[in-house]
Length: 147
Image 1 (cartoon, helix red, strand yellow):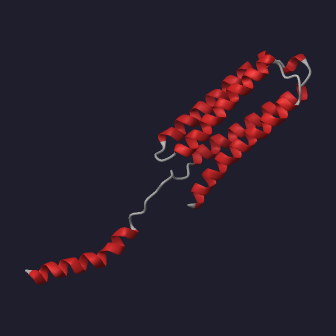
Image 2 (cartoon, rainbow, N blue to C red; image 1 turned 135 degrees about the vertical axis):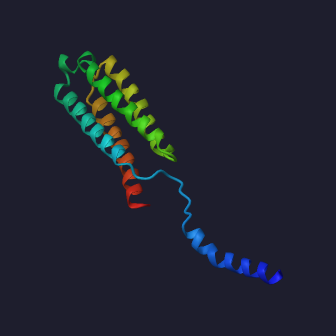
Image 3 (cartoon, rainbow, N blue to C red; image 1 turned 60 degrees about the vertical axis):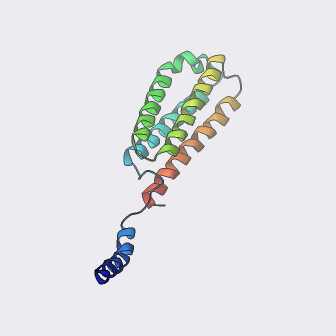
């Protein structure tokens, strides 16, 4: 009996590395192609938005009321992205990044409502949004590479 117990323990020790190598611990979600595409599309939409504001700056065409539909569209896309990111396990970092973009969009919208009386109100937020989308994409691409 003692021999059998020792033999079983020996076999378990031999199998342990094989079992352990098949069980990797993950701390972050896998790469998601849909998230990657949504973020890329949103960045394109935001870039167009800021470029359009830049061209129309100082004219009545740059007034908030002329962009309400675009704000709705961007908010809808961000909500869809948040929903997608939230549905993936261990994706809290991406969810936080998206929520930060949503929050910043609301802040920019309030500034826009009050009037954009200086180009800095377009240039700086444009850089901030671009950086936010770059960071989300960097994380997704790192996931893709398995980093």
